[in-house]
Length: 207
Image 1 (tube, one colour):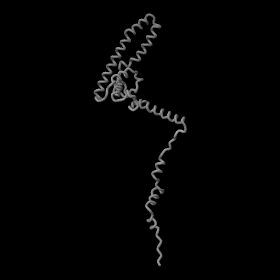
Image 2 (image 1 turned 120 degrees about the horizontal axis):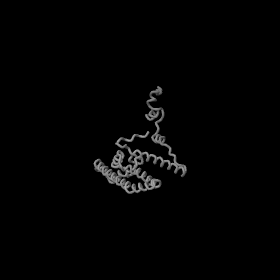
Image 3 (image 1 turned 180 degrees about the horizontal axis):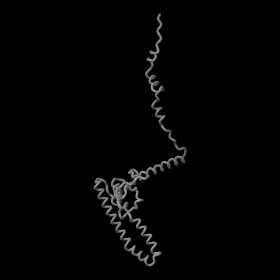
Image 4 (image 1 turned 30 degrees about the vertical axis):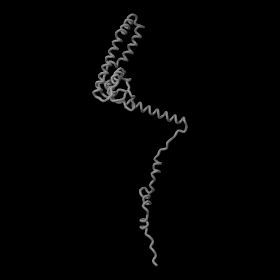
């Protein structure tokens, strides 16, 4: 007899499922599934098309790695240093030597100069040149070697003493010899490069 009233729009909205409401909420579009979102985040991997391309990519990676390793060595980064230069004791030895001027660091330049003089003087110096040559070979050269050996022993003992006091549990094998050999090198040719100037001041960064 009485017809059933049609449901109002308010009743229709209330009967909507929560899932459909969640899809329309927010940005007005369905929320993407996790698998789809991860697929969009992935970057495409460009595989080499042939062997030549693979070799080229390998060479580029190796070149970049060499550059990174050299920059790390120049900074003194322990990860990139050779085994002989690693460890706090070796770092102390380098800093100790680089912060001082020693007699042994002039051994190589003086030796080179002396060799040139000894080669040139007998050719143009006549009897006086031969006398100077004999004097240098007999007295000057042995004296220089004795002074350098004494300086190297002193450097070795001092560095070992300071390293043993500062790092009592650290292995100090070869640290003295390491410091003595570094002290004999020309400062510009030392590697890893010095981080301290003579006197103990830090080396200013290169611009």
